[in-house]
Image 1 (cartoon, rainbow, N blue to C red):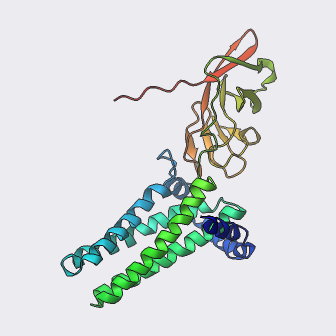
Image 2 (tube, rainbow, N blue to C red):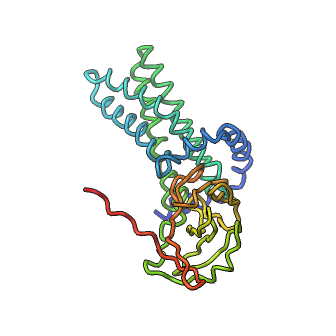
Image 3 (cartoon, rainbow, N blue to C red):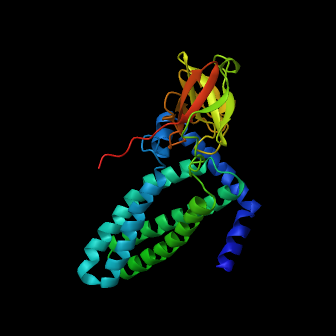
Length: 288
């Protein structure tokens, strides 16, 4: 385990990868610049990132193809179909992954570009495997597929490191527990019309702002990458994060535009005797 940890540390510090990453980032950002494309690939309408959902498709297809390849001739056709299905599924999976990677920095960016390079290599090997199978070179096709699977599993390890060790695309407000009872956060007169105000409730930083004549409050830490929303732009009933442009509806914290996919925690607000009181919004119990 220490050997793996040391290797990952060296990879995170390999600055030479930046020279590769930056041109790729520029091309990717241009490709996902249209709002519709970015929102789709970010999983804005899904409620969490799209990429992790899609990875199960090619990994599952290619893993099962390996099982059928090991069984030999009776299952050859099924293995071929699964290799082809994995190739089709890998395209949107890679697109979503590159979209998420564009907003990473330094260590995460370096691990991510190697993760992407391994995935592209695996994709090429599976493409060659399918071509070999179609040409009747089944032994070569199986060999290429097994090589692709080995690279895919290595890449998957790096992907897990990015998500679970580095916290890429993990909600930055996931562990924020605001007060469940009303808490005084300041004077109502201190909240200027149209100006975001930073307050604190139960140790959680909150954005307090007027919206259509009433006060609203959201967690101030952007769920996407932790940007300070009070330094963002408030317009049209929404707040836009200054870091990557994620846009949230002030009324309820829902995501309007990505790259964020997780809604911003919102708070109930009321004014009593000139003082602003807030409490965490009660979640509705699920219907079972």
